[in-house]
Length: 483
Image (cartoon, rainbow, N blue to C red):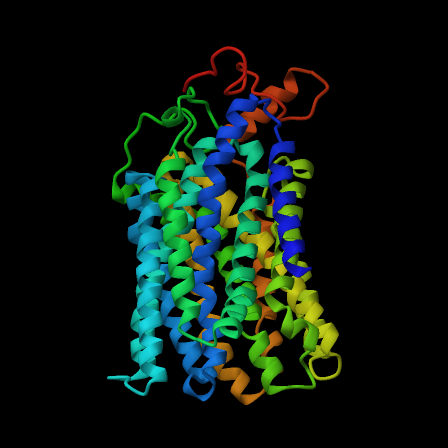
C-alpha cells in the first residue's frame, strides 16, 4: 500500500506539471520538456538514495558505527559537498547541465560501489585502517560527485521554464528530493531485510544510478534550441544579457558580492539545519529513547518524509506563484515561522508523546523541503539568471549543506548529553531564517517585475504570467521571440 501511495504521488506530480501551462506552450513543447526533466529528475532522486543510504547502513552496523562516528562522517561529507560548489557550479555553467549530470551519476555510482566494498571489509574484520577516516574519505568522494547533481538539474531547468512557471518546477524539485529520501530510507531498509546484506545498500543504488544516467545520455537536452525549438526569454536576471560571457570570477561575484544572494543562501543554510537535523536523527532518537519514538513513524520514516516533503514543495511553489507574483521571500518566512512553532512543540513533548514528536518531525521536514525548493531550486535561478544558474544555485545549496554540517557535528554531540537539545537546536535557526526571509519579502528580478507590469498593463483581465506579451509562447503557433 505504501509503495502504491508513493506511485500515486509521482503520478500527481506529473499531472500537476501537465496541468500548469501559464504561458500557453504547445503540447509538443510540454511533452518534450517532460521527457527532458523526468529522467533527469529520477536520476537526481536516486542520487539522493546514494547519498542518504548511509543512514540505514550505519543503523544496521550497530556498534561498529556509533552516532558520534556517523555525525563525523556525514559532517565531513556534507562539508565537502558544500565547498565543492565553488568549483563545480561555475564549471557546470560552462559545460552545461547535461554533462554535469553525467559526471554526477557515473561518479556517484562508482563511489557507492566503493562504499559497498569498504563495508564488506569492515564486516569481515579486514578493515586496514581507521573506520571513521576511511568512511569519511570515500563518503566525501561520493558527496563531491553528488554536488554536480543539484546544479545540473537546475541549470537545465533554467532554460526550459519561465520565471512564472518556476514555482511549480520548484515544487517538482522538492518532490524529487522527497522521493529520493523514501528510496534512501525505506528501500534501503527493505534491501537489507530482503538480501540480509548491508553492503547491498550501496551496490543496488550504484547500479540504479548508472542505469538512469545512461538514459540521460539519450533523453536530456540542455536547452530548447538543442531539442529543435526556438529560444525564448525566461525573464530572469539574464534577460537581455545572454550574449555576455561570464568568467569564473564573474560567476562567483554573482553570489559573493550580492547582498540579496547571500541572504537567500543564509535562508537556505537554515533549511539545511532543519531538514537533515530531523531526517538524520529521528531513528537514532527512537532507538535510544524508546518512550519517545513511535513504532509507526520509525517503521515508515522514509515514506512519511516523502509524502510530507511533496506536500511542502508543492504548497510552497503554488503559493509563491499564485499569491505572491512568484516572490519567494514571503513563503520562506511563513515556513520558517512554522518551524519555530513546531520545534518548540516537539521539545515540550519529547518524552511524553511519541506521536506528537513524529508529527512535528515530518512537519518540520515538510517546511524545510518547501524552503529548499524555493531558495535553491527557484530563487537562486531567478536572481542568478540562466548564465549563472549553476553557480548561484550551487553555492546557495552549498549553504544548505554547510547547515547540515553544523547540525551533524552539533546534534551528534549534544544528543549524547541530552536529547532535549535536538529540537531546541533548531529554534535559533528558525528565528534567523524568519528574520532574513522578511528582509527579502518584496524582492523580484527586475526583468520579472517589468514582465508582470507589462502583462498587467495589457488590461486583459487575466492574471500576470498567463502569456508572454511580446509574442506567442515557445512551441505555440508562430515563432517565439528571440532574445
